[in-house]
Amino acid sequence: MNQGPWTEIDAQHDWYNLPRSAPPKRSATERVADFLEVYGDYDEATAREQARRCVECAEPLCVSGCPLGNRIPEWMLLTAEGQFLEAAALSRSTSNMPEICARVCPQERLCEGACVLNGRAEPVAIGAIERFINEYAFAHGAVDPVPAPPNGMRVAVLGSGPGGLSCADELARRGYAVTVYESQPTPGGLLVNGIPAFKLEKSVVARRVSLLEKRGVVFKVGVTVGRDMSLAELQLEHDAIFLGFGAQQARPLGIPGSHLAGIYDALPFLVQKNTETPLDMPPIDVRGKRVAVLGGGDTAMDCLRTAIRCGAAETLCIYRRDRANMPGSRKEYDNSIEEGARFSFLTSPVSLLGDAEGRVTTVRCVRMELGAPDPSGRRSPRPVRGSEFDVPVDVVLTAYGFELVPFPPGSDLAMIKRNDRGEIAVDDQQMTSVNGVFAGGDLVRGPSLVVHAVRDARRAALGIHRYLSHRRLFELDADQTDHLSPELTT
Ligand SMILES: Cc1cc2nc3c(=O)[nH]c(=O)nc-3n(C[C@H](O)[C@H](O)[C@H](O)COP(=O)(O)OP(=O)(O)OC[C@H]3O[C@@H](n4cnc5c(N)ncnc54)[C@H](O)[C@@H]3O)c2cc1C
Ligand code: SF4
Image (cartoon, rainbow, N blue to C red; front, side, top):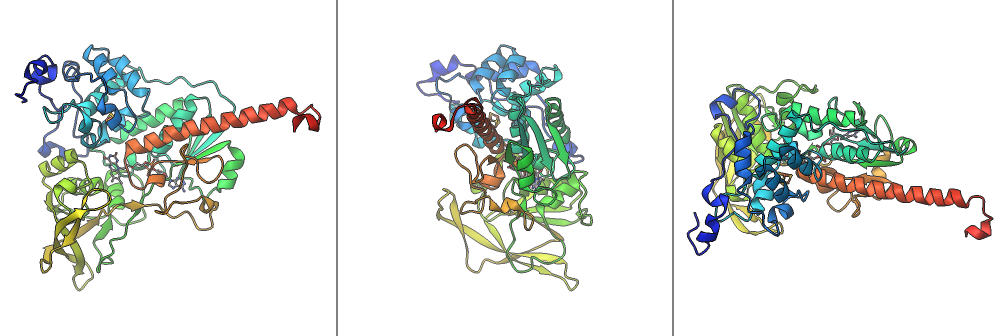
């Protein structure tokens, strides 16, 4: 605890005397036996107490640390006073899925990482309080939507990940008739077919989808746009379009031996073990096996923890940088360790070796050291000469990140311009190179975060609203001047 000249002033604040307390968490032994969520909710007294740790800064850094600019100090004050429904209403005013962001945001890099208490004490538990107030609002029936009066315009939302769902929500609130087209049988995108249930239970996503349905949003699932319907057909039937296809194509491993049996991409593995979504592939069996996961992001840790729940004998994460430079969430790293996963940092796979039947048996690795920081600020790893060693394995899961899935061959989606990195290019209103077609989420920024997809979608919905409002004004003007002679209208 801080003992400097500020001690007297600090002592007047609740954070000085009240330590941060984590929400209830199931023991590692209990939770590896199922896929249920790891964390529970605060009780009312703890939520109020924890909210009182907020110092109500005049210029709150947590608000700038949150990509949605959530009004955190305001809902902290309401929570501290026990006005939970008012706090939740305020949190919903800047976020379309606060109960989901509260569960999956890497808070230590966002709102909580920016909290002014850091360095003097533990930050305010923003994520846990956001989750508490919103679950409280659901439990008290305070989230039921009232459909907005129709404004006569139609928008197609393509893809139902957090980007698509948030855009649909924002537009439905403004009276647009929204239809969501989704290629999978269940809406939710990676919230369902990626992020495992122990981080985000499927029922939480289904509850959000059903709220949208109550708001009047129509879901058409099992429709792959570009194959079953063209962009041109959708443009004929709708006034504007939002693209939220995400980026779900696995980046290639690019080392010798990648073709061997027993090597799988992360996403099909996670989908097979975490969902009912049918996949055209045989079951991946990890029971009693030694599983190596290649990569160091959230997906890698989700694979380790899913493999543990499926009975793997050993799970090892192989990652080329050190722990400090690992992109995955710190909280989920700690959870992985508690559940029995092991990590080999500063290690890079150079090849995969197999047996006579062509099954993978070994990951050949090289030790790495960190050099100068790259343009992203992270230190670049380089191999240590002569440091190769072998890791015996039965199954390898690859989690090297994602890129855009190519559009179906011959699709008119291909006319939409891309940036240098191959992602869909948008302007500051999220509009693509095609008039009236907007985009957001992983499709425009590459693999990112749920909260970033929500932010893009909110901006796109506003862009669509402005675009269509201008168009309507223009059409009204034209209608009113139809009866005038041509010389008066030019
Ligand atoms: C395993 C894993 C774990 C993750 N963990 C976290 C985490 O803990 N926290 C976090 O913030 N982020 C996490 N992420 C990242 C996060 O899930 C994504 O950034 C986010 O889901 C992107 O949202 P989106 O709406 O852009 O796309 P997606 O969620 O990818 O949704 C895109 C949707 O579009 C549909 N679609 C694609 N093409 C078509 C088509 N042609 N026609 C119709 N539909 C189509 C897809 O089926 C999908 O449902 C994780 C990602 C993965 C893979
Ligand atoms: S949306 Fe994410 S970053 Fe923003 S307050 Fe909630 S948990 Fe923090």
